[in-house]
Amino acid sequence: MAKDKRTALVRSSELRSTAVTGAGFEGVRQTRLIDATHGSVHQEVVITELAPGGVIPGHFHPFEESFFMLEGEALYAVGGESYRITKGGYGFAPIAAPHAWRNTSARAARWIEVRAPQPKTVADAHGTYASPELSPPKDGREVALGDPRCRYVGWFEDDQMPPYGPIAARGAINYCVKHISSRLLVQDTLGAVQHITFLAQLPPAPADKRNVVDLMQADPVSKTHYHQYEEVYHFLQGRALAYLDQERFEVGPGDTILAGVGGSHAVVNIGDEPLRWLETMTPRPPEQHSMFWEKDWAALTALPVTEGA
Image 1: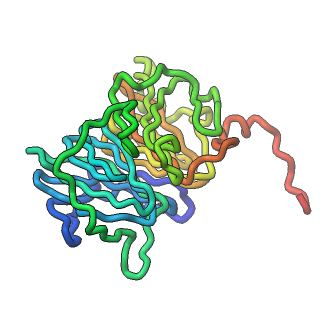
Image 2 (image 1 turned 90 degrees about the horizontal axis):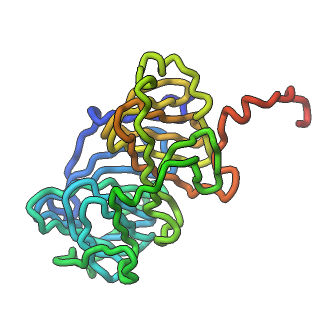
């Protein structure tokens, strides 16, 4: 992120995975999407891949760590229970809660992982502490919505996306975006207090509004906004035009955006299918005034700056 910018774009073509080689880790690779090197100060977002037979030993952190399963399946232990997490499964480990993984299937499992607050190196440890009393699970219950034994985990399927409507996020209701659907994943009702994750979706663009050249020249102020917390968008399907600090970029599956504190941003669907992304918010938005829409403020006549104002 440039010194005068508060947003960043990471292309899928730029990503490289590295092996995790800590004690007890087997068959684990991680790909960093967003961290401090991109200008983030509140979170770290990675993709974790666990090979067949791979294990992540028991450990805990001084941050919340959430996940959303992208491909495959794996066993996950947290809070005294073990679960079978399949595609669409999500959950998190609270601060200082031991957790562990094992892949007993015949294919690799891949999930996106969010850590908030951002990991910090303390006494030569980068936020990961061994918990040898917790062994990687060998079996686990299926995640079922409504089962009170399923703590810290949940399950998503496509039919859970609500109808399109005006944006209605925590602390913000605005009609600048009139057709959006969102499904909360990790949030306070699941036990998370440091961050939020959810799926967001925009409908296909009308055929006469898919010309990228025209959109590049358009004024995005009607949908551009900023806020006092960080967001990350990781695109899962579709094509979009992203407006980031007055610049425009075409993005697609696997691309990731950081909207830092005060960074102006907006996304517009330019494809013929729904545009879907996984989004993070951290710190958690306030109950009021959690988004500032530039169109609303541009319509006002600003007073000149006077001494003492």
